[in-house]
Structures are given as structure tokens and as C-alpha cells.
Length: 82
Picture 1 (cartoon, rainbow, N blue to C red):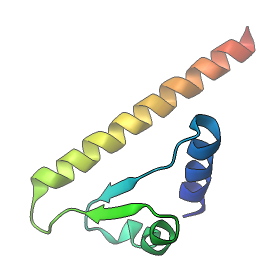
Picture 2: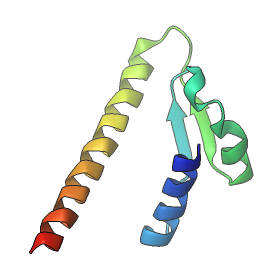
Picture 3: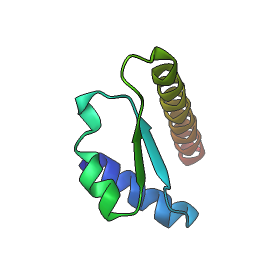
Picture 4: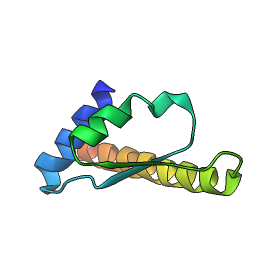
């Protein structure tokens, strides 16, 4: 959870924007985010049980975010090396 809190703070500082909503599958790995998201005004939405179509959407978005983060990180490393 602390990594997510750091990510929320990073988005706020870097882009001067607030995260509005989070979509997750109904797995237990993100249940700890419910209280944090409620406290910070983030809409926490889970997919319906037994609907793999919604889960695929979440997984695709997660993959996109990870790819963008990897690409951004590699550009920063490349720029630092000169």
C-alpha cells in the first residue's frame, strides 16, 4: 500500500492532478486500498464476480501503465548517461 500512496503523491506533484478512480478485479490484493481511497476522495471500483471481460480490461490498463512507466524510466536513464 505504501507504494500506491507514493504513486498518488507523485501524480499530484508531477502533474498537478488528482487520481479520480481505481478499477480492480475482485481479488484481495487491493482491498487495503478501500480505506485510503475513501479518505482521499478516490472512487474505488471493482469488477463483478464471474465476468472475465471486466478483468481483462483492468489487466490491459495495468499493462499499459507498466509499459509507460518502463519507457519513461528508460528515457530518464538514457538522458542521465548522456
